[in-house]
Length: 452
Image 1 (cartoon, one colour):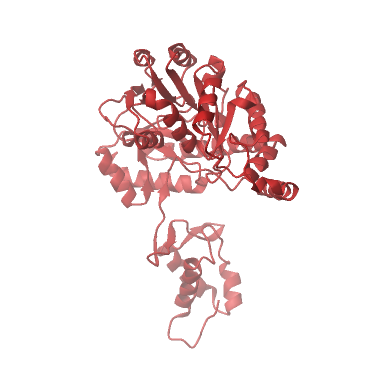
Image 2 (cartoon, rainbow, N blue to C red):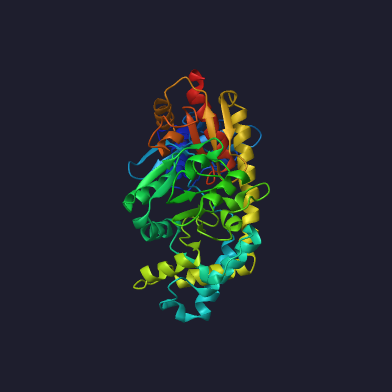
């Protein structure tokens, strides 16, 4: 930092401008500690009071946060917008798509990736249509250890993410049937079904999950179901409801079971529909995007023999679209125990974030007017807020002031057909730090304070 004592610009303002410039250009990042007043004054040869004046202006202008007895830190409230070359308020995005990636064992993954490329240059040629045999075996063993699922390696098919596999399944099965979705549906599944132009029928999904009596009235169909920590309602189906779904299965009746956040259940793992049915008419859908990283576009299905046979017939002109190098690396990552250790570690991280979110919201006025459900697994929950404001206006007000939340009703075609009250939010915090969770919740409560 350079100071021109001959300049007509006051020294404290020069210090201020220098620090703002360093923040804007990314040399100082959010949560980075600034030099102490004493050390900076000694470095620049100015009075501590001058540095103090500069720091106070930085605090007032929200570039810096003062923490008693700890010092001054770059604020995470403001971010630099490269498009408009201005500082703007940070958006606290409580998205359900976020994943904590900073804890991924990068060193182990990088080492395995290098070893894979060095050992087998043939991996850059075409591979098996259903995916690498080694990865399919690794997944089979992993599913048995973690979910109690028994299947053969031949029943596992690898694809480029859950969405692509789901599209393939809809195109394979739907021409002769229809898709059955919860009336509170996961928007991506709904979008894929619309894109594939397959007929959709809705089944009521309340606070305790899917209405199984209504399901029983359907004589055919493909039910998409997340029995554990359903997105967006966060409901985990009871064993009784799972049994009712198994009873419904039969000729022309299938379930696509999205494993969702099975891996992040904090309590005892509930039985999968595949395990309960023995794999009859159940297609188990899994992905590594949530458990490792969003960019890990490797998904898989475990399917009955009949579906596997039909899949191969449909795909006979296609090659597998997942990098063989990534598949083999992932297989080693699983077999050496890195994957399960990572899952166990992340389960604790997400449990800590869930606790931080609950504590943060319960410490505000908003907490006194809210009910939290579905906080027993994973990276999101449902928050029902008693707010004296129409929900779309509340959402717009929050977004204008830096808090982005998804309404449950945004995942519904018929908003009148629901057991959930207005102003119910699907709140994710997987990608956020604990400090961001606290700051975001405090801002959320502050924005709605006059409507509570």
